[in-house]
Image (cartoon, rainbow, N blue to C red):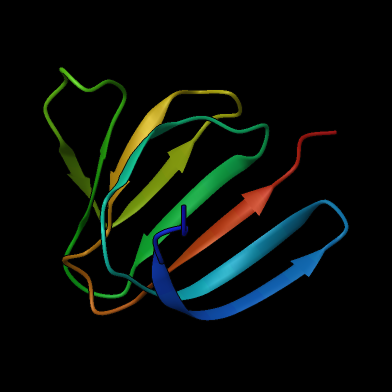
Length: 88
């Protein structure tokens, strides 16, 4: 099956991390990754939660620890940045 598009924007990768600046078009379901994640809203707030049963929490900046399950909804912001930093 075809993969759903998450959003549009600019992507830059380097050894040990990457940066996405743009806008998301849908919520991202529960997932986890090795990288530390920093999510920044340009305006409004992003919503983050640690489980499907947990209520959404709104932030203009959120940090997600490595290997921490989470879901993110950044559709309310015009654009934002997501930075992934691999732990050493």
